Image (cartoon, rainbow, N blue to C red; front, side, top):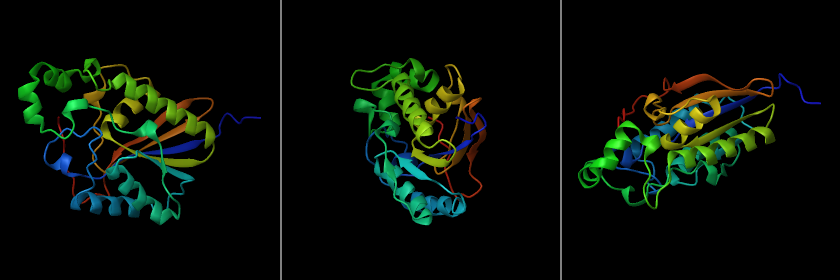
Length: 215
């Protein structure tokens, strides 16, 4: 019999800093590894979470997320589990390009990204609605599999925002109302009776260095 108060604790983690963050590049699925600051952030994050018991750590397949997850897993004595549902948004031809260049070549689309990215549709790219659908479905499945325990998800800003909005029922426009920093963590709690609830957002007290991204 299912206990309605059975609590599952979920840590939602943004990967550490990469060159794309530091140099203002659109990332998407361009496979930037962690830079020097990002590697330090991953160590600080792992130290912060060393006493938290995770049944599993799930990660995007991209190296900046994998490296962050591996740092956490070393202190847990487990291996990260790759989940395609937590892969970053696919941004097509924008990936790896400077934001200044995109703003000049695609002024209409860039303005939409800056204001209402939930409405942005580009050929060969994912929409935020598509990201939200796959990320929420993946989290719901894992929550059922890990019910009553605790797990972590290491992913990307453009996944965390629609994911959090989706599980909490926050309507669009939501994207620019949520600001998870690199190597930050947020805590979601789930019970069968009440569903998902946000108990902590964008914790960065463990970080000695991070940059604020506005675009």
